[in-house]
Image (cartoon, rainbow, N blue to C red; front, side, top):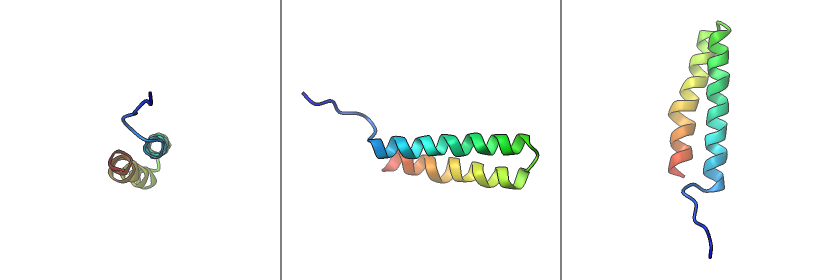
Length: 55
């Protein structure tokens, strides 16, 4: 009997990368670099999370 998971390994890798990018974005924001933080947060929320869910 095989187990079927909701997300494939590829999805989990992309979602893990999204979490890492978001953490880096919030740490960058806390350090006072708003422009770099905004870029990281947009990449995490608008690019990586949707790709991780859709693939």
